[in-house]
Image 1 (cartoon, rainbow, N blue to C red):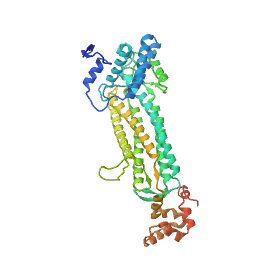
Image 2: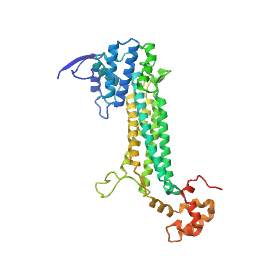
Image 3: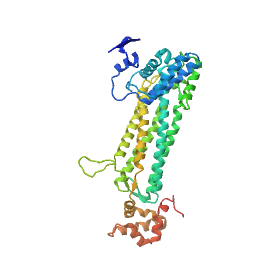
Image 4: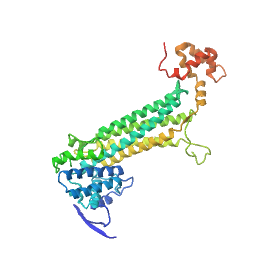
Length: 442
């Protein structure tokens, strides 16, 4: 195999002649022989975008020749269209290996020096966290759109099931009546909050430290570049990017990522809760989940709620990632956060997984059917429907009816109530309109 010789601070090294990167990436591949996933493609694309913005700023200010800058910009665009990276996500050095990888690949494509040209007026410590924020904002926007579609499907189910009476459950026991539509309406409202929170938390990521170089002081970068680089990034990304007022703060502290992760965790919590509820409704026979695969290798005819179980596992994973993100942010030291590679990997994974989960649940929920006869059977057999009659007959009379009914052999409590109270009162009291009227008329 033909090789080429490159040198760095540690000395010289032979690397494959056709390697699209240089000595820094070659050393990183040897230093971090890790499984468990590569640097996210979305982060590589965002890094290439940041490098493009920096090249544009350096070109406009005359720090790079137009020819060299244009070659770098073209290389960045190629990487943005095809973002690949062989490095593992969990590398040491606060992302330096990833930054050097992108510098070297761009340099190879553009015929430019990876540090003196591609990395001109930059540091890993301002480029890398800026790219994480760019990648996260794009992911948030996609996620918000997916949640919105899921919310719409549950709103349609709310309307579709609005006429079906059912019993609420508290402590997993029969409680007071409501409608099946109201239950799905509560699911839709939870997802509406998730959509709004996800859409709004983009604001927490718009402030970047690009131009701050190593520790946020802008050392080695000209002031004109510092003021222009973030503007260029805003133009080419279409995002509301702005340079932080205090770049030392933006470089040292990663609490914004923790805040955004908390929003992801809230969405995960809702998915877990609602998928659990859907499993219970399916188990009781009130709804029918779509059958998507055989459920057992030994029990013929068994069908399991596998889509819901998959979504719930994603919810658990996202909650675990929130712990990772919190730990990483809190373990930064002084003017840098050394653990941004793990933080960014967990954050971007959570956003991607949540998007997949919401899309999967939306497609599944669209075909949920209600078993109206089963709902009514369970509804009219339950003694708890008596609670709806309290405003008209009082607590003592209601208690008497329940006690008397228990001494009969009947299972149809509604028919018994009609015999005792009359059909008009019973039908009116147990109508979906009355059950969902938010209180009664005095």
